[in-house]
Image (tube, rainbow, N blue to C red; front, side, top):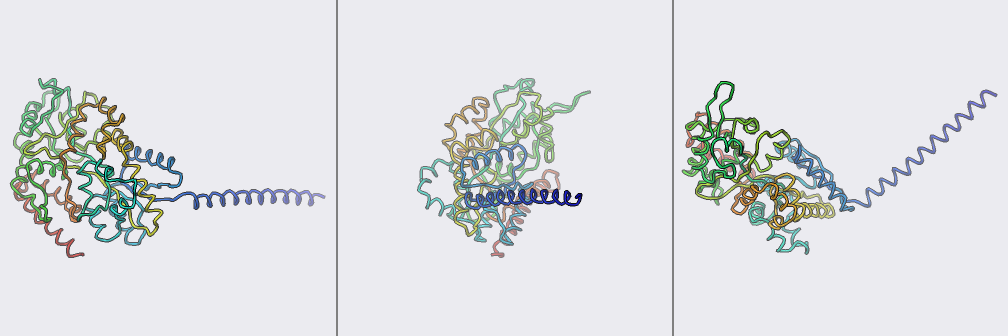
Length: 439
């Protein structure tokens, strides 16, 4: 009968569906069981994107491949400011990640809030991480993670300031393309030589540019023999050394008119366009610039020096947040050790132009091959031998933005350099007092 044929088809159809559902349940059940039993999953929040984020992702994939019992799951955040805000929100509700990039001032704040795993305790309980391992790291990195005598973070992606220059412009101006100015005065002289007025059909060219930058000012005041805060956390950036440092760069812009005043990415773009001959940025700036055509021979150089050879490091460290799960905390430490070992830090440096964290990395084939291709980078690496770091005080993260505003006022002539730095010192004192009262 026609009805019985239709019924038979329906039965066969339902059997197939049930068989498929049963098979799917077995597969999903098996996957769920394996995920729970075989891997310790740790969450890592970071603020790296673009080519730097790409390299980081590739290295994390390699870590996961070579550590079958651990899985690092990343959550890239759009910027460091956004990362700071998201971490604060997560900590308020106890949903923080296992690992996160932080700056020294963040780590100091988190330490006060008692939410960090002590790096010192991890090292003390790890027989493989010997005193020789610690001694292999550049001293400035170990100093920058030590707050109130203890380590609460670990160096991760660290950079120094560097100069990139147009060798062709040097040659046309009668300057040696292989020699970059070594002192403040020589740099000022080069700026004068390299600055040319506009002519019909051609833009004016400048020796350098100046974009207000807090990190650059930390470098300049350090080279002038000063500092931002003294050993007792008193702001002293308005010292004679601070005023001298600010006047040095402002004279290039407003007196000599040999440094082009720029904002944000305009300085880098002017350099790539050939209207600025010498551009100061992070050592990793070249990683971004290489994404665009560079139509001239480019040179690399360390910063010109003045009374000291000091250079300030910047970039993020990494912390482990308390989770109450020793297995996750141990897995997070394993990732940190792997990422900062000799081979990995050498690879990270050669591919991104961040600094190698260990002295032994300089002897690896990876770095030697990199320096064979870019020999002038050796001087940039050498800045680590006499490097300093920014203030660790929790107030510094907010104060950095305030310093930028103060430097802008001085550049625009709204205030004198002394007035701008006096105001900044008062603001920093206010922020420090606010942090202390919140404890």
